Length: 251
Image 1 (cartoon, rainbow, N blue to C red):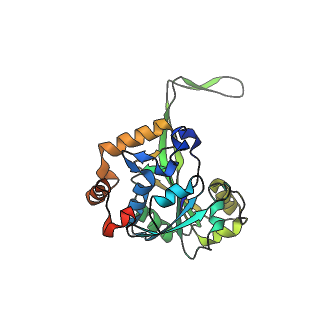
Image 2 (cartoon, rainbow, N blue to C red):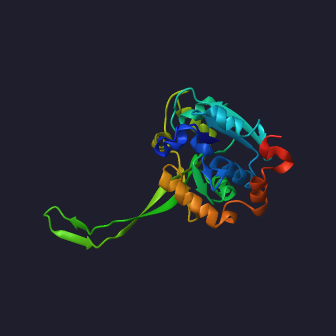
Image 3 (cartoon, one colour):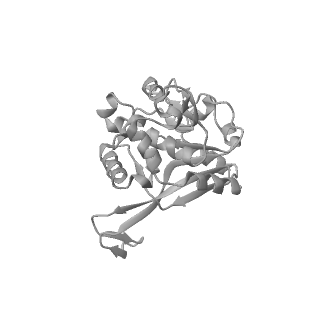
């Protein structure tokens, strides 16, 4: 399931006319890149959770079959967060990958899914390493105000959620049908019940395209090494405007 219903407010004014999932990365809608990656990883059925400008996103695929993938469309009448849209779907029958529609990444989706299936976790979160350079000296003091540490312009490292999850059907019992809920709250509720939630740390490329600056960085990364994200065959099909069995243009 791909969460593609957001308004993309931080990308305005561009998203006044183009929904964020169709925002071009070097000429290719980010959502199309994600779907091709999922197909290459072995996925065959994807549900798109839509909201803002849903009609434009649906029209970009020309139907329920695109690039060898079966597509379903789920419509949010009002924003339900990053976990709430799961309640609009029929109950899961098996482990399901859920992700945001605004990510450029070279994560190995198949390996993530396989690792989860081998675990005892109800959820696995893809984690990316993020580094932040502090422009000033960082000082720590104890209760008596004595300096205990002083580091000049350190680099801080954090593991952040990559916006990609593999979830078990049992998690749906923790959601209220039609209610708003975000993924951190859902997974916190699972952990409170003693359920296992695992992290999958990957050290590849990960770009959120939520702001104009982030979109620019993602575009530069994709342009510099397209083969890192899409195979040469997929690239040629996209640039030619055609796809497998004419499906990329909805034929």
